[in-house]
Length: 589
Image 1: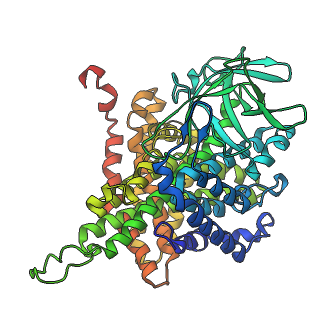
Image 2 (image 1 turned 90 degrees about the horizontal axis):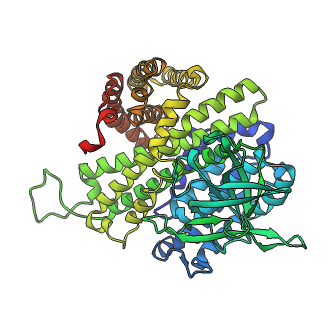
């Protein structure tokens, strides 16, 4: 097993934390058992090590290039994607009805984390394609499903999402890409920026999901429609060989994630790019959120996996690297000790473990909620669980990407000067992970979404759900964890009171003050949620004794002693309705 994957962690999170085996009691997952899960994980780990990790460094050093006609990518990327698809992993979470394997989402998230941690650049292609397939399945017509989904799940077509534009960025209300009706299709014209996987020769076709506005569109986001715009159109024989009017305007050269093609695409420079309307007109942003929310959870999972890979590598290094002596040892002639014996190195390792394994548990918890939605016939239960998942999504994306980048920073610090060189992988992991707080909606946007929308939706139901879940966990905590349970319960009550205070400002019409410190709110909420999940992880270790379980208890203790106390000052700041960041004038910088 490489220094980038810990199979024991996957087994713990799936069986002891998420209790995936209980899902097999339901008809939807009755075809699954532990033997199947273990075989799938074993296959995923093997492919990740043999085909993804093996070219991660080479891909980082040889990013895609464009000669004016063709985008060139090292051949190992295609080989890795072929292996991924041949193993059926692209279709893992997809329903039987659509040609998938109908695996639990909890399992598919676990194995996708393996690929993100070993080579996020190559893993981005299936991540986007699976999410695009799910969008078409959810909102496309029967003809669109039969035309596009099957070849996407086979890996013959790969997918993208085309939202941002050079002049608009994340402000989708300001997009200018237009779609003109032309018989049964539409002709699109405009430019899209930051398109991951937008141009390559890795597949027979590329399925772009593009946001654009019809001629009669209302202003703002209410006037956005969604279109399938393929790279190639069908010829007279039904083969996808005729080029569509989609052209590459240039590649973006990134700090990390270098192996994923990222580009500017022009639609309709000649006759207008042919597009097919998905669903109803002017509903495109609602449909696109289906893919965006899946991608946001994927970003959080990727951040956790990259952070955990850095943790495992730095842990191995700290175990083998000998340097210095104990503070109480005054004998310069004595043998140096492994740096893992130094307290500050232990601190950084514990922080990495607490952040990354906490974030991994959050990603799998979110996937477990989706599985619970799938297996219930109770529509109210479905609605309530989906509401809670919507609430957690910005936390999965933003908290995980914020703190798992910090974990990567600690990994570099542990390696010291070596960590800052390209001869060791931790600097690459950091550069790659640094994108995750930015894409699929910056973390600032996630905080606005959490406080401005998710907290107040359905009259605050998600807040009540979280409080109830935390209290239930605290009530069930064994005696040796009661102190942590009491600390968590007290913090959650303070958080709820602060939530009421800041929402009171919104009710008074003070929206700017209400949202002025939304990032502080997301950090506080994220810490609360991760502390709750760490208590659940520690409870899953109850009665079990080995170095692995003691390590889990130590990480839980670290989070409650070093991290959860940080929530209090953030809540005090929020309750004070501080307007420093709101009222500072641009000229004062």
